[in-house]
Amino acid sequence: MNNETPNIMNSPAIEQTGEVIGKTPASPSKLGLLIGLIVGAVALVGIVVAVVVLVNSTKKESAFDLAVQKLLSQEETRNTKVTGSIQIDTPDSSSGISEINLTIDSEVVGASLMNNTKIGAEIKLVGGQSIYPEFEGVYTDSGDIFIRPSGLISSISKLAGASYESLSNEVPLIKILGDIDNNWLYTTSDEIKGFISSNDNSIARIEDGSVQCLSKFATSLTQNTYSLTELYNSHPFITATQDDLTITQKANPLYKVVINRDDLVAFSDDFNNTALVKEFLGCVNASASPVDSNAIDELISILPEIYAEIDDNHDITRFYTALDAETYGADVVIDLSFSHPNTVNIVEPTEYQNLSETIEKFMQSASNL
Image (cartoon, rainbow, N blue to C red; front, side, top):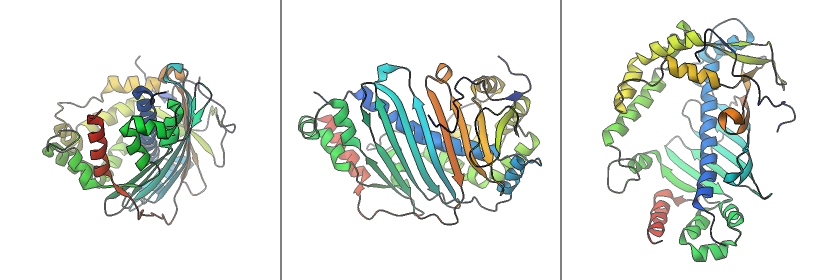
């Protein structure tokens, strides 16, 4: 764990005001768990960024709130750089994994969402070995997407206790993984839409209308962010305090996030009645939003403590939280730093394989097993 930030695994839920209610290849299960943990961590980074934006959505006159006003005064989203770590200790040894340490380095061009992201993992196995898979991704302004997994073969070989040569001779799928390991794969946003369309070659048969509906919804969400800000200003359910801090600040003043339950419920009720939510529910064929007062009470009851650091320029420079194994099944510490560079250098790979062709080869090999 990070020596600079004492563990708060056993701390109570986030402070709140208002009433709270109540020799063979590695087994598929292990490989699936590894992939799921890494993919889940990537998704978690996105969630954390969203929470930081939300934390910046109140208008009172503390340094924390001035950071909000600065964010809301931007005519367009600024470039953002995220670095940091996610540390996961798993008490359940049945998975074969005892600890996962992720390092994150990501830059996003705010105006276009062009980005490059690198996530490295150290996965400690129960037997004492460690594996080091990595993932890189690039998204360009033309909608081109490049991904590069690394360390796949060395990780699989360690898990299987066999050399890559023997594995690839026994299992054709291993040979395909060897071909893509540490190489860039290329696809486009349009091609990904094709993967989930209703044609016979798709990986999931979803109606074209639903895909188009969700695409339109995502566009509307981007274009109508201001209306969400106005709604939040009517129910400012996030504030901050510098009292009872249980972690150590690194470089800037530290604030503990406070959730007001009643304001959050009121915000949720109003938000659920917006055209935006109704459009989304129509896309997914749902009659009502699952986010109601009962769901909010359950969420607040398990929320961990959340902290943010604010610099002299009224920018959030750090996000910190910790989850405990008793509640979440693993001890997790998320410690991320944020900055806003003037320039983001997006390097588009010049040598790559086509992702759709790789998937086709993989599926053909899998069908022959």
